Image 1: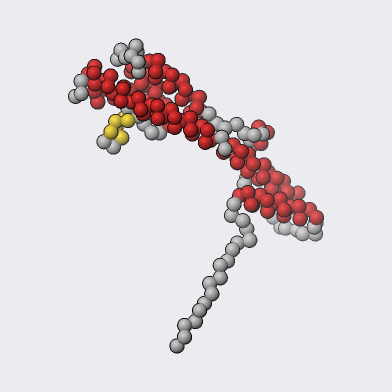
Image 2: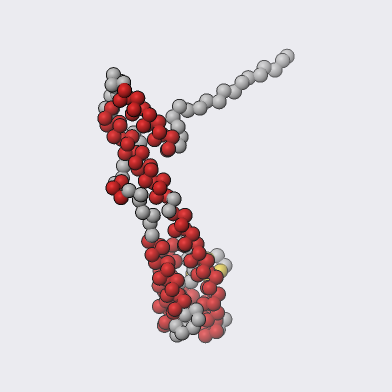
Length: 185
């Protein structure tokens, strides 16, 4: 009894999976259809198809160029987060010095510090973190820490640096291409 060897056939799709390849295929098909006007489809005309492919390609190019700007924004936010997190101990130290070890935790919420697992930290969520910065500034003034090295001047600087970065969006390469377009043709 011999064993039969069976070949497994790997099938590949004729339709590309990547959006850039789909855009290239769409442009190629649109150009070929223009050269062969005898081809007809029930659901679209040659001109409608060409317009959809052109719109898809423009939207794709805009998305790819805009997406490249997000890494710079993310890096700015990471640096600010690191600065906030590394100086949180100083803020906690001010509370400990003024109110004592037993009572300091009860004041954390006023400063925007919340319990995360077993530790007290600034929120990770970007919107909550932005609001926590505002709470920190208000609480520093209210508790009399404004003149301290890590007082109003320090936290106001961080708040002013983070506000524009939080709302920053990479600018589109061509502002005329900002209308949403269906991404299939």
